[in-house]
Each structure stands twice: as C-alpha cells, then as structure tokens.
Length: 235
Image (cartoon, rainbow, N blue to C red):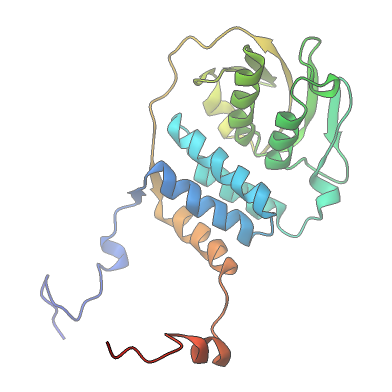
C-alpha cells in the first residue's frame, strides 16, 4: 500500500523520519524524570528530587535527563544501604559498596545545610558519587540558604554554584560517571553560565518513558469492569 503524506491510515511519521531530539518544557522534563525515577524504585520523595535536578540542569544548559537516566541505570538493583551517604563532620562517604547516589546525597546536603555535618567553612570531602553533575542543583539550594556561593572541586576542574547558576568546568563533570570531590564556600559565579537547553534525545526519552510506565497499573478484568460511570447517564 502506498501512503500519501496525509494518509489517515498512517498514525505518525516513520522512526527514520523523526528528528534526533525533541524539545520539551522544563515542566515536562521534570514530570517525566520524576515518574522514571519512581519507576526505577526511588521513593516518591527522592523521585521528585530527581525530577527537580534534571529540570534545573536543563535550565542551566546541561542535559539533565541523560545524566539522570545514566544514574538510574547504574543504581538499578542496588539496596538503599549501599548507596546512601554516611554523614560525618568533614567527610561524607558511601555507607555500603557505593558509589553514593547523587540524588540521595543532594537531598542530604540540603537537610544538613547549616548543621555541623554540612558545614563548608573548613571544607567537606565527599565521594565517590555516581553521576556527580546531578548534585549541582542541590548546591544551588544550599547557596540560597547560606547566602553564599558553593565551590565544588574535583580532579580536573572546579565549578562555582550560587542560587542563580554556575560557572566553571561543568562539561568535564558531566562526562564523569563517578567522582569524589570537595565542597567549600566560594565566590559568586561570573555570570557566564550556559543558556537553557531543553532538547532531549529520542533514545533518552524512550528509555525514561519505559521506566515511567512501571508506575502505571497494568490492565485487568477488574479494572476493565470498573471502567466508566457507575450509573446510567441518559440526561
């Protein structure tokens, strides 16, 4: 059968006709990443933090959805005790076989901001951390609470983060699947951060969508029988 461009029997473009990426809004990225994280067995609270982190990164020129997908794949099947941070004054490390989950770490840093265990005056050593780029959004939160920029130093570069954005070697950190780093108080970024990027690769969106589908209830005879109105509607 030959299909014309507007053939109504054709439900959509062939896969080969699709562009390599799609542009989503920040809200759409956060919603998809939240559901994907939940589908990957994160708690709803952590999933919401994961969605926030991905959206924040896209808003600051970093492909947060791809970073989150890589992290979810790496964390798959690992027990919470293996990936949560062991919090200590001056040093945070993996409690189990690690590496530390970057989402769990970010949430813990936010919770300990202002407490002795989270103090940055003397510096804080952290790691190893999975997909460390995902920590930046939480450092932005810390900077807002502290009223001071936060400096992240890793092997190969450094990044300064405040409540408005970042400056430094974000590209290098994005390419690292795992890293240890130091946190300390820093000077405010120079304002030359990257513009937002909301392009998402179709392969990334498909994989995130597959994870998100795990949050849905599979159809059953009971769900089909209960579908629709419970009473007749003849008005």
